[in-house]
Amino acid sequence: MAYQSPISPGISWYETTISDRTEYPPLDGSRTADVVIIGGGFTGLSAAVHLASSGVDVVLLEAFRFGDGASGRNGGQLGTGQRAWAEELEAQYGFERAKALFELAEEAKSHLLEFAETHQIDIEYVPGQMSVVHKKRYLKSYREHAELMTTRFNYPHIHYMEADETAERLGSDRYFGGLYDKGTGHIQPMKLVVGTASAAARAGAHLYENTKVTGIKSENGKVRVTTATGTVTAAKALIAVNAYGGNLEPISASHVMPIRSFIGATVPLGDDSPVLPGGESVDDSRFVVRYFRRSKDGRLLFGGREAYTADNPLDISTHIRRQIAEIYPALANVEMTQAWGGSVGITMPRQPFVREVMPNVISAGGYSGHGVMLSNFVGKLYAETVAGNRDRLKLLEDLKVPAFPGGRTFRSPMLFLALSWYALVDRI
Image 1 (spheres, rainbow, N blue to C red):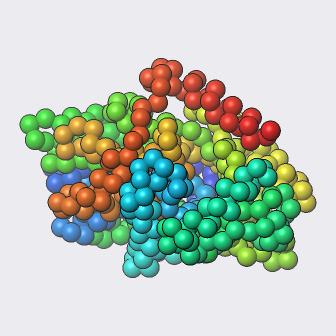
Image 2 (image 1 turned 30 degrees about the vertical axis):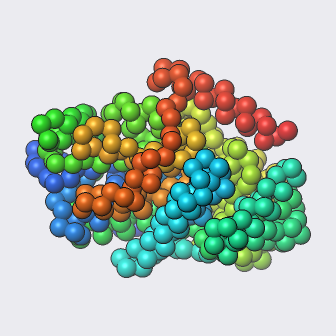
C-alpha cells in the first residue's frame, strides 16, 4: 500500500507513482553546523542543495517525511511571474520594482527546469498553461493583461483566447475566454521533492526525517534548534515550514495562514478523450481557484475545493467529482482512483513572506498557491544570502506583507468569513 502522510489527508496519486522514495534517518544526538534548516519541502531542500554544493555544512530537519506537506501534494503548475499580476505589483510598488519581481520569478522558472535537467530528475514537465475566465465581466482585464505582458513586461509567450479557442483547447464550453501561456507548464511535484533530496544528500547535506523541532532560540551569535532527540547549534537558520509552522515561531505564524486544498485523480481518460487534448494545465478566474491538468498517463488531476480550517472533509472525491462535472458533464460519474489534500500557506496580499524573524534566522513561506517554482528559487536565494549576497532575496523581504488581523485567536474565523464571502461572489 502507498505511503499515507500523517499530516495531510488521503493518499495522493503522486505517491503511488514513486517506487524509490528514500527514507532518511531521524536526528540522533546533538551536533553543530554552519546552517540549520527547518522544513523539508521545496524551499528547505533547495537551500540544502545549494548550500552543501558550495561547501557549507548544512543540517536539514523535517518533522515527518519530505513531501508530506504541500511540496509533494500540490497541483504541479508553475505559472508565470509572481502570484499577483505584474500590473498589480506596478500599481503598488512602481514599474522598476514590479519588473524586477517579474524577472526574478521568470528566472525561478528557468532555474527549476535547468536544475531538474542538471540533476537528472524526471519531473515530467509538459509545456502550456491556460488561465480561463468563468465570468464575462473579467474578459477585459484578461485581454489587457495579455497585451501588457508583451508590450510592457517583455513576455511574448502569452496570448488572449476567444471563447472558441478556449473551448477547443479545454474540451469544454464552460468558460468564456482566457489566456494561453506557452512559456510555462506543469510537473510531477513529488518527483521533484524526491530528486532534490537525493541531490542534497549527494552534495553532502545532512538530512533528517521524522525529527520534529520543538524550539528555536537565537542568542550570543548562535542559533539553537531543539528536538526530542538532540540539539543543532549553527551560525544561521532557515525556517521553511510554510503552512506547517504551528507555534514554532510567532512572527511567521501571524503572517502565513494555512488553508486546505484538495485534488482528485480520475482513471486514465484515453487518447480519444476531448479533455485537454494539448496536455496543458489550467487555472480559472475564481477567487477559490479551480486548477486541473492531464497526467502523463492521461488522468485528469483536478483541484478546487478549499477549506479555511484545519479540518478535513470525510469524502474528498465526491466534492471534487461534482466540480469536474460542472466543466465536463460527461465525466459526472468518472471513477476517482485517488483523492487527497494538504495545507497551502497564504498571506494577506498573496505575496511571499520572507523575513528575518530573529537574529541570523530567516523565515520563508506564504507562496499562496504559486510556490512550485518560487519556493525552489527562494532556497537558492537563501544560499546566496549565506554566501554574502542578499540583494535578490531582499526583493522579497521588502514586500509589504502585513499580519493577519485578529491575532492567532481570531484570525481563522475572520479569514473563514472573508473567504466564504469571496466563494459566494464566485457563484454570483
